[in-house]
Image (tube, rainbow, N blue to C red; front, top):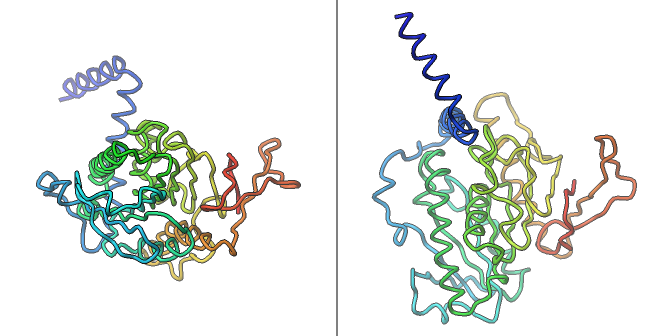
Length: 330
């Protein structure tokens, strides 16, 4: 038995020595991400789906509904829709909102839609409903659903561009995993998407426990302008890398955010407080839509590792930003 264990150890060490650094990172990913994903699944009620992914058809399980007026008169747009030009106003920009993981009641859309239609005048506005794929366990959703939904959205936008709609007039707004879907969609259309607003983009399995790299998750190069709002870094949200062209960090981006302290020390109270911080990015973005309610971030130079805010550069969070690159603290 001892000889067998020694042989297996030597064999493993030999394989690791022969492996490339990319191989080692892949092995570490697989070892570390499973337990973290299962931990996230434990807080979901009812439990996430674990089977049936391959039986879904994107054409039937993903829905895109759009309105071309300020009133929410949504119409579904199908794959290869021959009536697309009657459902969208091609003289106006296009905004697509993308919800997050396990959003069974589409609460992001409930919070965002009416304020956006009210304040962001003269735009087509669409909701991407990928709930059928978001209801799976976290690992399945992160590794399979996110790229699949991004591919679906890419197909729609590619078809739109063939009808001479300029993709630089497209804005993607994604919360949590929706932010990662926005990023992967942008990679499929290099430097063509105009704007991405990522609202506390999902961190687990994207930035931690291992950063999977800018080719597989949201990055500043995924659109001509990428603004990211961080409200639960290293927990539900993204970790060390600040991956937007312009980053806004209330409370330095960390949980708990101002309205989100846990009211008890039970697991459900702690989980609820974390979810509050995660969703706080949506609240800030929605609040910032009112032009009379500016939310100002400060960009401060770093001297000897410390931020010095004597004469900071300022910019507004949200759609009225001057788009000054860098990290802005609230």
